[in-house]
Image (cartoon, rainbow, N blue to C red):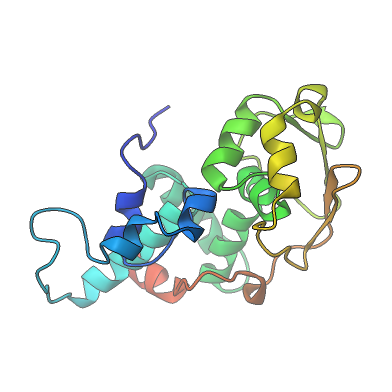
Length: 208
């Protein structure tokens, strides 16, 4: 499957905000955005006038990169969100939030979504006592998450659980770090998504 293999810190610099793609490094002084707060490339320092289309495109790119979703995947999420009842933008963010890799990150079992995807593909987690190695798997209220036997031996997961830099646990999830288990207790609401994403701009982009 196609995937982004270039330096992920370039993505944060291009969007001008921290996307927290490298976990703890993003919170340290080593974060490239702290040292070079301008877009990468030869013309990164030059002021460029953005059109309304450019603003909408940047918002879509930011959301896509935060969740680590490819272009075709993102469009399919949007098309599915547009068919559901309610606001299309909020439906879109809700589907992205309930992805398996995002839930693992939100629960504090990984330092980043990228790391969560790797742990999932290595079969470290179970959903409802069944091993699932698909990062894009969509969870629903009532689903429980636990570690597989391999996951219980993973030093990286233990390091993340013991870290003080875990992301704040959203209200729609619950976790027991002693038993290393978690549960989805509700669907995420718009207020539970703390990233500054203007989803209406994404809807306007795809509506053209």
